[in-house]
Length: 92
Image 1 (cartoon, rainbow, N blue to C red):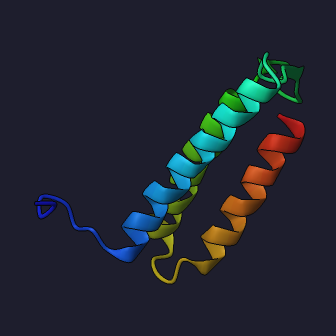
Image 2: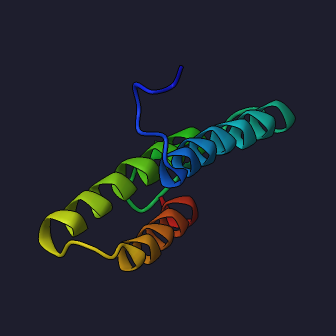
């Protein structure tokens, strides 16, 4: 039934993580409406959803650049991506 996609454990974990993050943001939006807007270091007014999008986009670029320039293993870009996520939600 799901043979059209290579469902490996890492693939499943990525999708579970993305959908979990969206669920948490949905709960936060219901509990605290308005998206927690703030002006960050880029000078843009962003909401929680904007910061999640920037985190996901930056993480994808970090991993693609690492794979293109260095290759395996992927523990170092994982640490960089976690740092990028913390920076996005803290300062952006």
